[in-house]
Length: 306
Image 1 (cartoon, rainbow, N blue to C red):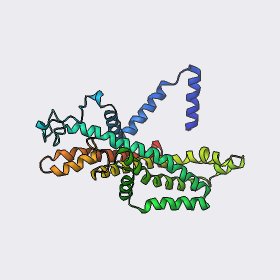
Image 2: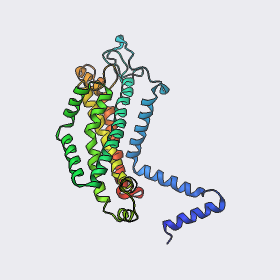
Image 3: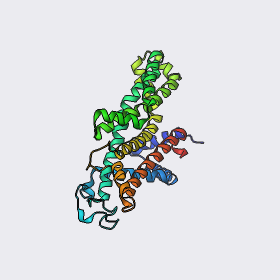
Image 4: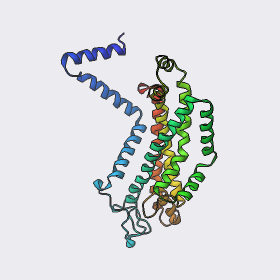
């Protein structure tokens, strides 16, 4: 029986002899990836959808998306048609364009919240889990204080202090998302610091910073990547809730939550007003959850187990 290591050595030897990698090996890898994509078609569709939506939202002019702020009162409340795929709103603005531009706010909020919440929460959890004792207790109480308040109420209070706007809303959502990364990092560090490779590194004289950053943290990144997908979902929903309440981005900037809030007023007259922004948000949330669950399965079973 030929083991995987023997196969990899034989591939390397053939590459060294011929001077180029074996073409059949690339074909095998391609077939494996295609097989995995077919078995996990839902995750593949979710990834393709998010990538396509992100590209259209970042560079809408490249795809011929019209200006979402142009008003045409004569075309108010037009139903979905070839000219206006998602219909028009009460001011005659194209809802397809506003839904696409609204993705900028939601996806931008998700990326910003995950980046900054991870940048703050991971070091806090890393220090708390590594040091334990008084440091762990103080940070734990600080995180419990944040978690003691309902997230939406805490975000509303922060916006009341900071003021309305996308940046302030993103800051509020980031603050309530920090404990998710900090607590998971702490739990992972408490488990990893007791393993043999950490004891071996400490024995050969590695200092505390090296142990935390270069030895323990890389082995905690798997669960944190999964957590990032769920935090992004949470950020999108919370931002939409704040915009729905009039505390998010300022009009006339398109926002899914803002469009849902306006659409409920005309629910019986123009059902498409709130339906399509809500559908877009639902698909994004479902896609992120699907990718998060797929990443979790990869961590448990590996690629071959998908």
